[in-house]
Length: 372
Length: 124
Picture (tube, rainbow over the protein chains, first blue to last red):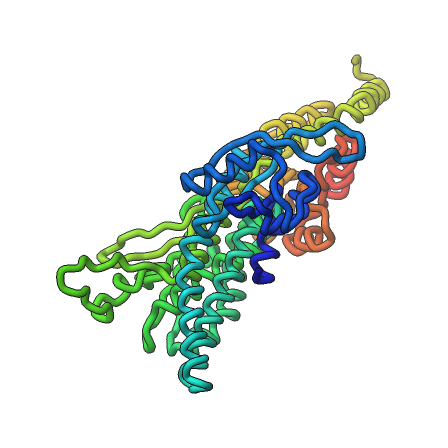
């Protein structure tokens, strides 16, 4: 297994088993091994789970099942494991998610992630494989090696984005409360994107509506919000043509900050970026719907998820015949609702000091000769 | 009677602060977000502002503080920033914005009263 994919699966919660149709374990992450005692090469011992795997593989639909786990200590009670079995990457395997409530968010998130892997990783892998074959057959031809290098690079970039997607899915890495000045962030992001824009012969013009807007503050994860802006800016630059000027505008709309990529085609399928360059469909065959490159698809999913966890959204808008791409984020306070915990801590502090506060007020009033 | 303006988006915290201040003799005003707080400061001219740092809206506490301290007619208002962010760089940001004091939540009501008294006695 590719080390990036192994890292991706190891970091997933809840426990994960990758099993064949016959119930032989191909991969078990740490959490799954601890709960089931299973390791690669061993067979599922719980008959209900084995049946659920066969049914999920055959029917290509998820199954929920309760299976027996392995006791945490020798002689301890055998735990019941709530498992969700979902179809795997090919026609003859499945994934088993093991957790307290795998049918809830994690299961759904994992389904989404597997869907991304199935749909978005397949094409780059196929391309890399055929380039590899060509390179072998051409015995060191420079063009074939070049094509292979590009395709392998595409696969690696896609895998890298998948790892990022997996690491933000649980949202715990987004718990930061950094104060982020949007204008400063945009400048940082431009610093990272400028080489790509220069390479592609594009200029970028930044505009802010009003001077105070430059100070707009967001609260959240600096690391991940920066990632969103880098992804969006890179997608906009990649979709532009040499000589284009990309316009990025910052608008403050009440309690929300909007960053508008004006008519740039960011995250738009190739046909809508440049209809002329699309090859004509063969006669009698409907034209296939244009599709984003895998890395853009995953990049967009990653951005949507990060932005939504910050209380914002990514969207497209038509404005005077132009199609704009917008990042819309709340300003001024973090979206995450941890107020209740803070309230409890503050209330406890008050409860501790209230008696002292009252006593001090009484003493002062007595000293001032005021009746209590 | 000294005037104090509380600018805090969390109603419960605002209530706790008001309760604390009511043990003393202050005229208390309240706002629930930054822009409203700045507007009220211009109208009420408080002696002191208790200003939450992270508030939803166009201006957070640091921006309101900057606006107060850079306005000749308002800069004499003492500003106490209230925040859940207690790292050195956050305090530094508060200082840069011109804040007179910085209290990290959860803060003690005794500490709050002490800070207010100290700042108002200096101002008097």
